[in-house]
Amino acid sequence: MTTLDDLWYGNVRPSENDLVVSAEEKSLIEDMVGEEKNLTATLNDEQKMLFEKYISANDKYYQTIECIAFKKGFTLAIF
Image 1 (cartoon, rainbow, N blue to C red):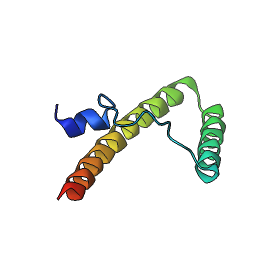
Image 2 (image 1 turned 90 degrees about the horizontal axis):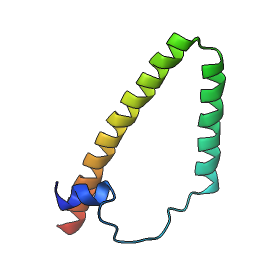
Image 3 (image 1 turned 45 degrees about the vertical axis):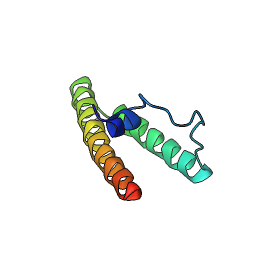
Image 4 (image 1 turned 180 degrees about the vertical axis):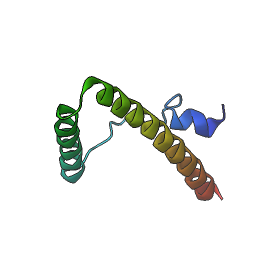
């Protein structure tokens, strides 16, 4: 694992400061959670399992993309 990977995955912590979430971000998160609850309330057990698999795959994809963007941005900042 590279140093950039370690930074991304939290193995190296250059700062112990907590992430500050803005009111707008908090509102968006609350909206997403509410809509997910509304959706899952309409699904049967099999559909819920499929939806959970979709969410997991989606999370993995976005984590990969965010890690790549982080490393590219960090590299650009150095040079």
